[in-house]
Amino acid sequence: MGSLTTAVTGLKFNGEVGSFTLSGLLGARAALGDRNVTANIGLAAAQTPGNDILAAPADRISANLQLNADYQIADQISFSIGYSGLLGDVEQRHTAKATSSIEF
Image (cartoon, rainbow, N blue to C red; front, side, top):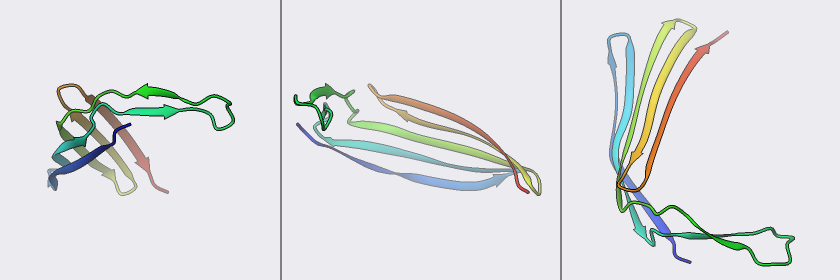
């Protein structure tokens, strides 16, 4: 079994545009070592050894993106929307998130 190490570098930003507070990250992730990793999965109480499972291969270099926008509607009411993504030749992950908050 090989091992995989990842390193991430990038720039974070935070600022206000009108009524919105914007924050985010623009970076790169590097995968070092065996990028075709297997994991051995089994039950501790089982009499037989576990099974090797091949994970999806990791890209050597991929882009890491995050963007969040927060809007304060009133003193105790806020709304937030965000995106997070990992973009590579093989690996693609995308997440969108929206949150509303009422404080009392």
